[in-house]
Length: 63
Image (cartoon, rainbow, N blue to C red; front, side, top):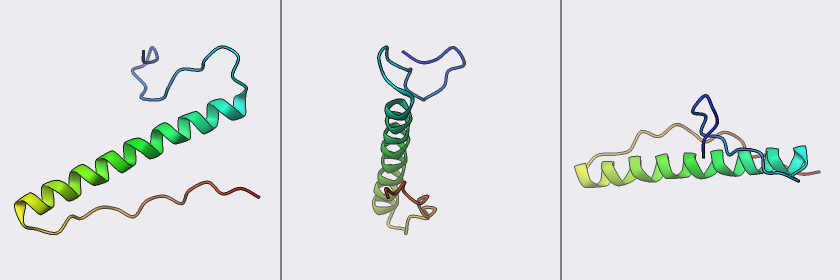
């Protein structure tokens, strides 16, 4: 179920701490970006052109 504003971010589950919720939102955003890129590349292949896909944002790193 989506938030009241139609946000694509996953709702906070009961019992999740803020860090887990943030990682979950980042995972959802990363998956959505990968799907957009794959769809764009597939459409370009089918059309016989080169996909113009923006460079992905830097991924979160750990210490």
